[in-house]
Image (cartoon, rainbow, N blue to C red; front, side):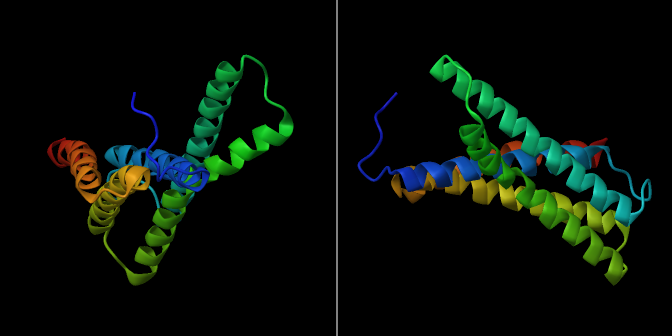
Length: 167
């Protein structure tokens, strides 16, 4: 592995961790969206479900980071440091909260389920692109590698979208 670039800093490390946590939420929603069929649940039930998926992703991110950190240290983490890990994991809830808001606004506007499901998928794909770009760009401020990562991650996200269209 290459050492960090001169531009690397603790602030950039925090941003990279936030991007990674947010990606948990986006991928969870994109994946959960595969199972939803129009009209199976109400808009309110869908919004609550999205928030629950987001909460599960916060906890998943937290537990993964906790075990990873304890493994690196070779000991248990105290409550203060565990709290910091939990706070960093809250970013996994960002996209599910946005998605729940979109669902409730769509319901208020009378949007049809099929259009809403497609909208959530498009938002998810867009978020994967932005997170892919951001996760690379924060490392060294180089747009070309960031764009390549964004395109690669988006292509993988599109595989899920295409699978939904043909299932």
